Image 1: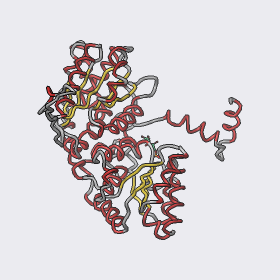
Image 2: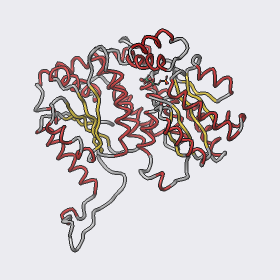
Image 3: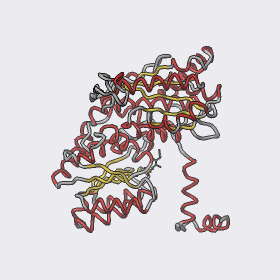
Image 4: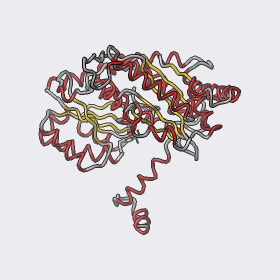
Length: 445
Ligand code: PA5
C-alpha cells in the first residue's frame, strides 16, 4: 500500500497547526465519503476498483483478441486530458524502457494522438501508420472536444481508405457518453463497438473506466493487477483515521499552502517510468484545485536528470515550493557496478553496488539538501514500479485529491476555466454559432 511520510516537513511546520489541518482534512474526508459535498454527482470513481465487472474486462479482451487476429501492431489511442493521461501513464510505467527499439511483438504498440493540434505530429503519425497494421480507440467523454475530433477525422479517413469501410468498423472502437455528443452519434451511425464513460466519473478521474482500461488491455498490460492495487487502496483509504495516508497528504499540503505560503508542489520521481505519472497527477490536482483564485500549482521534475537543470532553482531560488517525492523501495531489475583494475574513472568505490543503491543515495542526498535549502519534503512511497503499485497510486492520488480539494474549500470535480480558451479558439476558427465572438476577438487583434 502507498505510504506517506512527513519527516521532511518537521522542521518547517508547527505541530499544533498540523493537528488543526488534520482536523480539517478529516472533515473533508467525511464529506467525500458521505458524498454530500460540491460536485457530488461525480463520485462514481470512488468504488470503481470494487465494482468493475469482470464482463467489462472480458469485453476489452475481446477487442484485443479481435485485433490480434487481424495482425494489428499499432493502436492509435485518440483523446486529450483525462481521456489520455491515465492510459499514457500506464503504458509508460509498465513498458520496457526500450520496447520500441527491441520491437517486441507480444502486443501492439499503443501511441497517442488528439492531445495536440500539431500538423507535424499528425503527418508523422500517418508516416508511422503507413508502415503498420492499424486500429484506433477514440476517447472523448463529451464527444465534442476539438483536438481529438480533428485527429480522429484524419485517422478514420486513413483507416477507411486503407482497409475499406466495413473493415474500418472493426478497427475503430469509441469510448464516450452513453447518450450524447457528436462521437456518440457518429459511432452509432458507423456501427462502431462503443464503451461508455459513466456519467458520474469526470475525465481526470476516469483511468479505471474503459477510458484507461481498454488501451491498457490492448497494449498487453495487466489490468487485473492494476485494479487489485487500486482495490487495496480503496479499502485502506476508506478507514477514517489521522493516519489515513490520504488525510495525512491532504492535511500537510494544505497546511504548507495556506499557512506557510508554499504555492508550488513539485512531484519528484527518480524513475523515468514515472514521468507520465507526474503528467497525470498534474492534471488531476491542477484541474481539481486550481479555481476560485486559490490552489497549489502542480509541477514536476524527473530526477536525477532534472537535478542538473531545475536543481539549482529548487535549492536556492524563491522559496515558494515544497516537494512530494515518489519513492520506490526496490528496483525490479538488477545491475551491479563492476570493478576496474585501472580505475581510471575513479569509480571503484562503487564496485559491487547496485545502481539502485546509487539512485537511493542521490534521492536521500537531495532530500536532505533541499530541506537544508528551505524546501519541505513529503514522501509517497510504493514497493516497486509494477501494475499493482500503479493501481494503488492511481487510487491514492484520486482519493487524496478529493479530500485535499474539500479541505481547500473548492469543488474538485468541475473545471469551468477550461472553457475560456475553447471559446476564443472557436471564435478564431469561425465556428458556426460563434459569429459575435469572432467579431469581438478579431477587433482585439
Ligand atoms: O478532467 C476533465 O474532465 C478534462 O480534462 C477532460 O478529460 C478533457 O477536457 C477531455 O474531455 P473529453 O473526454 O470530453 O474529450
